[in-house]
Length: 236
Ligand SMILES: [Mg+2]
Image 1: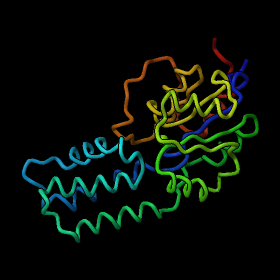
Image 2 (image 1 turned 90 degrees about the vertical axis):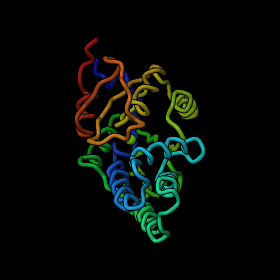
Image 3 (image 1 turned 45 degrees about the vertical axis):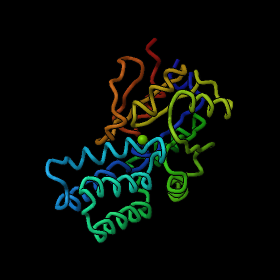
């Protein structure tokens, strides 16, 4: 029996699985450090300050570029003890707007891989983040039509996946989730009794890094390998 025979539905994450995302945040973080460091209080680690502000705000503002932008402004003010000039805040705000307007940049092989998987399996997308921005990315990706369902959620944890699969009438034991984050895409689905296929991206947001238990999921190098993974005989 091939792995794909046990799976009815393949779910894909979007950010850093289908299209670039973290690179943009890393670039914004560098701009933040360059812009604020002339005003930073002595001894302040600006990257740490920004990360701590982001994590502290997750519960009230969620994930995504707009939430990140607010945290960046807050961290600029607090780590400079209020001395950062408004024109520099303006530079950060302009950059956030640029990030929101930026065209979607698909990763290599994504369109071919999705169309190939869709030949044999039902395909869905589950992504988290800002509703307006993620919706725009999905709509401008040119891939919208491949997906039977698309869900943009606040958090990707066990209860969220359980509710989504239940809503879509999918048995978790026949569901494969493909994504770049072990924490958000893989472990919750494995815990529900489904399959996880990890595709590491070259950069990962610190918040998403976890120590993963070995042997509960597979890893492939690229989205182009998903079809072959599905076609491989199941070892057990
Ligand atoms: Mg992702």
